[in-house]
Image (cartoon, rainbow, N blue to C red; front, side, top):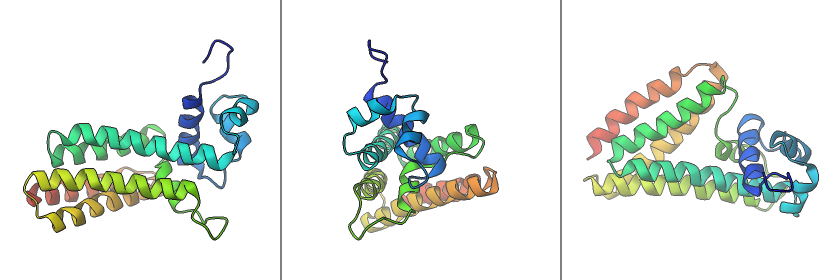
Amino acid sequence: MTKQGTPSRERIVSGTADLISRRGLNAASIRALAKHANAPLGSTYHYFPDGKRQVATEAVEYAGARVAHLLGERLEAGPVEGLRAFLELWRDIVVKSDFRAGCSVLAVSVEEPTGDDVPPELAAAAAAFEEWERLLTESLREHGADPEAAAELATLIVASVEGAVAMCRAKRSAEPLDRVARRLEALTAAAG
């Protein structure tokens, strides 16, 4: 909170990312986003004069960057360690939220855009997925994987983990993610 008692811009962005991970973007109004972040509606419009699209785009960028930062740090110890961190992150999110939260990047990706143009939040989601894939690909290559196989495995990892997160929420069980974790770890260890 600032001295005036208004929430910080980052708090609104992180609260928006959390709400989107739970309800999706289309189900979250700007009023709901402000309430979830425990922010006055006026502060939300002050920080985000372009409204819901602006705060949603920044929330997706924020979520994507947080995951990329964690992944990048852990990939320094190798692709298997990076994969484990990626999997642990998502397992913690779904389990600790009692299977109510998933990935805000995925959430905006599966919703139908309201117009013919690619909305900025969807472009932000694509950029986040590409960054995660790039980080994994580079680590795999640095540890001896064939360049093309590394890129394919990185895409498989991101797609499998994101899909498993959705399955965990639907089944209210971590089992899909645990199964995917075992198979991806074996593939990643064998790639280098």
